[in-house]
Image 1 (cartoon, rainbow, N blue to C red):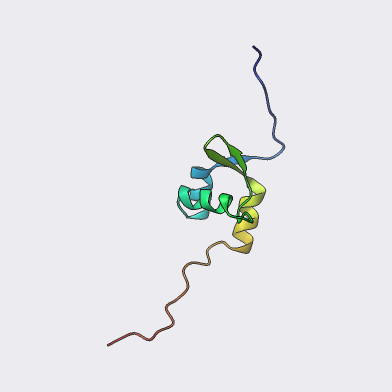
Image 2: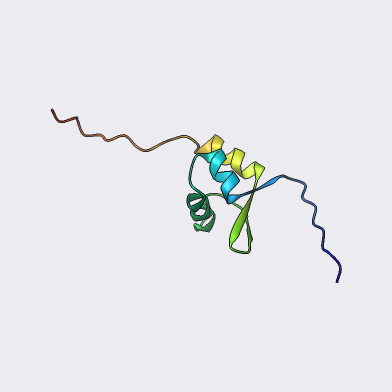
Length: 77
């Protein structure tokens, strides 16, 4: 049996690596990849995902670091 070699023209990251770059949890990255339509495009590999560098850059440019919405109610007290 011969080994299969795949060459990528782009760098791909695991869900854990992508999560660190996006400041979210690996489960959040998986959820983004599983959404329909995908919020973060990736390639399904076994139980995990491989996310291309270009997708991470696009996510950061479009949605990154927006944070949680602020509470619109005034503070009590």
